Image 1 (cartoon, rainbow, N blue to C red):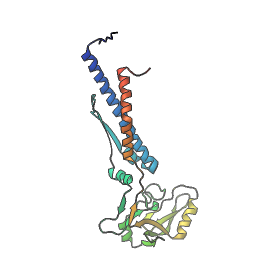
Image 2 (cartoon, rainbow, N blue to C red):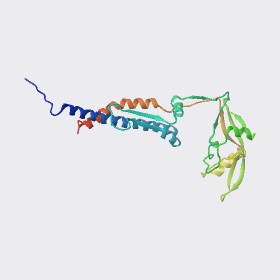
Image 3 (cartoon, rainbow, N blue to C red):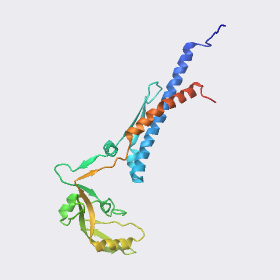
Image 4 (cartoon, rainbow, N blue to C red):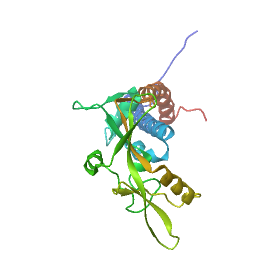
Length: 242
C-alpha cells in the first residue's frame, strides 16, 4: 500500500495567508479580552460602591497595541486614572493620620457638598480649619473610646419660600440641606431638638474593606485568552465548524 500527498497551490502563499489569519485572530482575541477585563473591573467598582462611584468605574481605561495594523504578538493594557483609590480597596489598606496628627477627620453625610440631600449652593462642605476657627465645634466621645464625633450647634434659620420650611443652620457656617423628602419637617424638628449636628468623625485610623479583585480579573482574562484566540483563528482561516 502506498500513500501519497500533494500540495495544491503555492506553499508560500498558503503560509502567508495563514499568518495573516493568525494576525487578525490574535488582534481580535486581545481586543475582545481587553475590553472584557475592563468591563469586569468597572462592574466590580459599581457593585461594591453603588451608582455614586460611576466616575471611579469609568476611570478604568484600555488600549490595544499595535494601535494600527495587525500583529501575531499584540498586547492589551487596562489601567485606571485613580490608581491610589483602586490600590487601597484592593489591598484593604490601613489609613492613618499623617504629619504627627492623632486623628483622621472624616466628613459625615451632613457635611457633604450640598448637605444632606440638599440642592443648589446649600450645605457646602465645612473644613476642619473652619470648625476650629468658628470656636463652636465640640467633641462627643464614642462609647468604645476609640474616637470622637466633632459636632456643631444647630439652630433654626429664617423660614423662606412659599412652604415656609424649617431651615437648619450648623454653627452659623452652613445650612444643612434636607431635600424634598417625605417627613422632612418632622426630621428637621427632631434635629433641632437635639441641638447639634455631627460634622466629622475623628478616628486614629481606618481599615478599608477589601472590595476589589484586580489581580483576579487579570488572571481570568489570561485563562480565557488561548481559547478565544484558537476560535478566532479557525474563523479567520475558514476552518470553523459550520
